[in-house]
Image 1 (tube, rainbow, N blue to C red):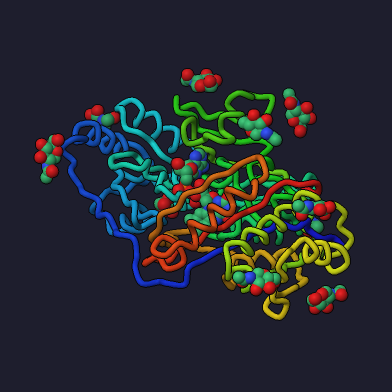
Image 2: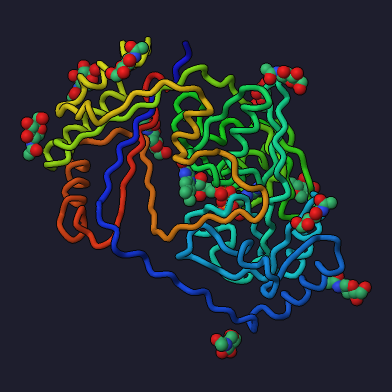
Amino acid sequence: MTCIPILITLVLASASLHAKAQVIQPTFNTTTWTKPYQYVLQYLSNSTSPFITLTDPQWPTYATTFNERLQYIPAAITIPNTTEQITAAVSCASKYGIPVQAKSGGHSYASYSTGGHNGILMIDLENFNSVSLDNRTGIAAVGGGVSLGNLAQGIWEQGRRALGHGTCPGVGIGGHFTHGGYGYSSRAFGLALEQIIGLDVVLANGSFVKIDNETLGYVYYALRGAADSFGIATTFYLQTSTAPEVVIKFSYSFPPALESIENATAVFMGVQNFSLYSAVVVSFNKTIAPALLEALPVPPALNEGSVEPTDWITSLAMLAGEGSLTVPLHGFLQQDNFYAKSVSTNVSFAEEPIRKFFEYAYSAGEGLDAPISWFSIINLYGGPDS
Ligand SMILES: Cc1cc2nc3c(=O)[nH]c(=O)nc-3n(C[C@H](O)[C@H](O)[C@H](O)COP(=O)(O)OP(=O)(O)OC[C@H]3O[C@@H](n4cnc5c(N)ncnc54)[C@H](O)[C@@H]3O)c2cc1C
Ligand SMILES: *[C@@H]1O[C@H](CO)[C@@H](O)[C@H](O)[C@H]1NC(C)=O
Ligand SMILES: *[C@@H]1O[C@H](CO)[C@@H](O)[C@H](O)[C@H]1NC(C)=O
Ligand SMILES: *[C@@H]1O[C@H](CO)[C@@H](O)[C@H](O)[C@H]1NC(C)=O
Ligand SMILES: *[C@@H]1O[C@H](CO)[C@@H](O)[C@H](O)[C@H]1NC(C)=O
Ligand SMILES: *[C@@H]1O[C@H](CO)[C@@H](O)[C@H](O)[C@H]1NC(C)=O
Ligand SMILES: *[C@@H]1O[C@H](CO)[C@@H](O)[C@H](O)[C@H]1NC(C)=O
Ligand SMILES: *[C@@H]1O[C@H](CO)[C@@H](O)[C@H](O)[C@H]1NC(C)=O
Ligand SMILES: *[C@@H]1O[C@H](CO)[C@@H](O)[C@H](O)[C@H]1NC(C)=O
Ligand SMILES: *[C@@H]1O[C@H](CO)[C@@H](O)[C@H](O)[C@H]1NC(C)=O
Ligand SMILES: *[C@@H]1O[C@H](CO)[C@@H](O)[C@H](O)[C@H]1NC(C)=O
């Protein structure tokens, strides 16, 4: 029986839901970019690249990004079918000084598929949507516009294969795999980007190149972490893994722990210590559960938790919280209105900053009684079984 090494996520949330962040309406003033804008439009009209502008009925579907709080107006959006069309659009935009940005899933927290400002040329990769597994080598060739859900479903159906990545099916490979990409299986498989073994890329200078750790190795290095500053990945070559036969999805709930800052801090320190020291995994019930429960100074409410063995693809659908992992290939639009901030550290937390964190979270007005809903997720990554 295969079992995924566990990853622990602590979630703290406020119950109130009565206010939403303010939506900032984009302002549209073409005056400042009229000249280059006209050139680029003329160039696109001359080319075979499909593109749309502000007055196109499809515009809202393509220009709108996930975070509705941060909406910007691109100068134009191309929806290419071929690498040559991307190369042409990038060359033209760079010639006239218009910034270019790729859009994959559009899920950037800061709407960076629109560059975070008005007036860019957006290259929407939705037609780069193929998932093709070589089930001899386990290498999948995946288009730059594929969503995580369609990717997971595709490699499962074509060969019962798996990749480590995040949980939300609508997130795109383009942003996720080039910036890190972390999920419940990261301790087993590594970050999403660590599974990239090669890329087909349109570079900022208009060249189309196939790169890996030996061919244009310095570009390959830059693409994994900072792709949006260097080029557009049209195809990702990913080393997949055999999907585990059994995945145990478990959760524990800690109402008593949440009743005081002292207890919340103690539970956090216990869980962190567990993730740092627990190594030998025999089975969930025989080793993980007892070791975890022993590490906890405040017992969880066992009647509220769950332990569910399932298969790989079902576990992904459960984590996604949606019936299906697959999302539509064209015109898919999901939105939320939020402000988010992340930090990561490579050292374990001392007790004092964790107590300070809970003091802040519990303080009236800013914390659990805040007028808008908020949540905080703490992921513990690393440790001996990682
Ligand atoms: C609901 C939700 C859930 C999430 N869950 C997780 C999670 O579980 N784990 C996790 O690690 N992260 C998670 N994220 C964060 C997510 O991984 C990042 O926001 C990611 O960058 C989104 O990728 P995208 O392709 O959808 O975004 P986009 O907005 O399309 O792109 C993001 C950036 O990448 C660039 N880019 C896109 N495609 C390419 C390409 N082919 N070549 C070069 N550059 C490209 C864009 O220009 C932009 O700058 C989540 C985000 C949301 C909104
Ligand atoms: C648009 O931009 C131009 C140039 O910066 C400025 O003169 C003009 O007032 C702006 N128009 C509006 C409606 O903001
Ligand atoms: C587009 O084509 C027209 C007619 O051939 C030409 O005059 C013009 O220079 C071209 N524009 C661009 C930006 O390539
Ligand atoms: C090319 O892209 C356009 C717009 O996205 C689409 O309507 C068309 O069917 C595509 N053509 C081919 C040959 O794939
Ligand atoms: C691998 O691919 C071949 C050809 O498509 C198929 O017949 C075979 O069943 C696949 N193997 C697995 C494990 O899916
Ligand atoms: C573009 O940059 C790449 C990587 O540095 C280089 O190999 C290629 O020759 C450049 N192409 C042009 C047209 O300058
Ligand atoms: C490139 O990756 C391959 C496959 O993982 C490996 O065999 C090779 O040693 C690597 N080359 C370099 C220069 O790191
Ligand atoms: C803290 O946890 C202990 C152990 O479960 C429990 O007895 C106690 O009531 C909790 N304290 C508070 C203030 O909730
Ligand atoms: C951390 O875990 C180890 C191994 O499980 C245990 O021996 C140790 O007492 C724990 N330390 C704390 C501070 O809980
Ligand atoms: C493991 O524990 C859970 C809950 O404690 C129980 O429901 C399940 O039957 C156990 N599984 C095995 C294989 O013993
Ligand atoms: C953590 O990161 C810092 C900065 O990159 C580095 O100097 C340090 O060695 C790292 N510590 C550990 C324990 O990995």
